[in-house]
Image 1 (cartoon, rainbow, N blue to C red):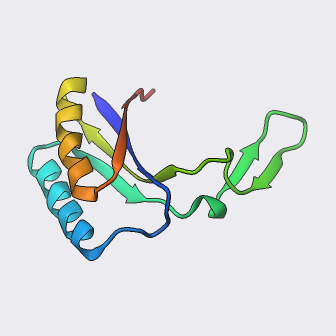
Image 2: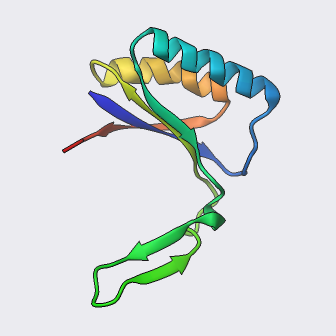
Length: 109
């Protein structure tokens, strides 16, 4: 099963050099364990564009879709046999990046 893991932050580009070293080591652990699928950082929400193509003409809006004090600053997509295993892995991920994480099952079609 795959899981989407959102890194929750309230600042942009906030990772310290020490956190980046810890994240790299954690990513190596994910790869070695066969859990790595993909990961990446995200630009600040102000760089986003919301696309609504439900009507006759598309509506494009600058900025985030919701007003919030926290946002997804990055993400992992991991492979784990079940939710308990994913949560155990990402407990270490939370420690490595020094952020709260949201773990959600990913349903791919």
